[in-house]
Image (cartoon, rainbow, N blue to C red):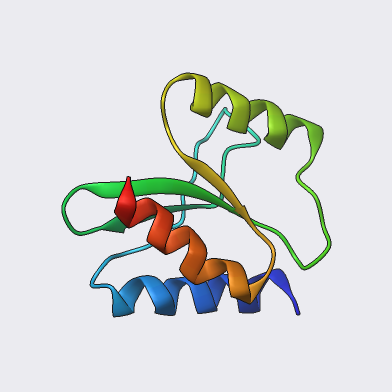
Length: 93
């Protein structure tokens, strides 16, 4: 499965929970996560999308660590089965 297919499935799942999932673009700061998941009741997190079996690059891992140190949630999504687990975790936060 390609990353774009997984990304579309994430966006559709977020929509079923009445949320939005905008593309996150950060000019001048490479390695930031691909999407921000915004759910009702101010529940949100960053999501990095990867094709199945792919791993985050070194710079991406460094950015994820920075965001986590700042208190933000960051998830790496590489399988359809993880989508609902991630969304449940975001809503429970």
